[in-house]
Length: 369
Image (cartoon, rainbow, N blue to C red; front, side, top):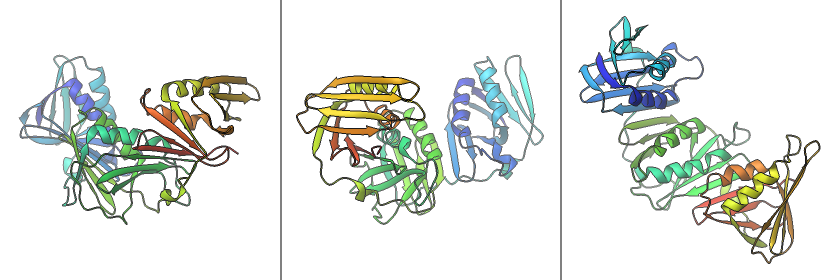
């Protein structure tokens, strides 16, 4: 194999697929990236057997078809530190040679045939949505996913096709984020009994890739009982699903509210961050006190001091005080545009609070007792 590659382009590609490299020791070869040169370009791939990525590059110049195994850490360091605009990569059964105009790096070769295949075939149940829409939906939900599973499987993002729209849901039992897409560009017949819980790692990688594409670039995807496949023009991402039962999230949304309060995302985020300065690890508690025409945010830590931040509101409802972990508010608010509409629906100070931004985003958060 022999190929000439733009260094920066190849570095970005290696960093993208490298996110799927096995973090723990499964097979030694899985700590590497496989490179295949042929036809009009170059394909890079990596997998940890649960998650797999294939990324195609059209810019390299292929001088000899073939394949090579590249140590992920070493090739990333070479691409970062080299100063050449282009690098040549040559490989045979015994070695991989990376060379620039002056410098060169030689590494032992491995057998590319030992690298496991990554599924790439979409089946007949194909859905399509704009990349920008899906990337925004993932950003608005992924922070609420549980880090570990307990009674229910919650360590990921739930994907559902519902009435030709896509719903993404994430929860850790203390909060829940729900994002709904416009009608999909293309949709297969939804299986309303199916639950597709995508691992957090796969969703982080997918969001990262989609965020670098044009907003209207098509993302096609297939949701299957045990796995899922996502494809853009250059990249295919395969992931196994998280095993286990997802909680019946639709049942926990409040049926009524006693107060609906309009909040500006920008001013509210500023007030929360200002008042959260005086919380500490022992007292992650922020009090929101709603009275006619005003919201007062207060925080106090045993060793840090106290904060009191007033914020004017157009509010004429009952007086309500409710307490939150400020991190749960800040993480949600950072995913919204500063001028986006935001409505807070409250029953009282003890019931879950529901934040809504438009008709396509809801965030339910439990108050502190």
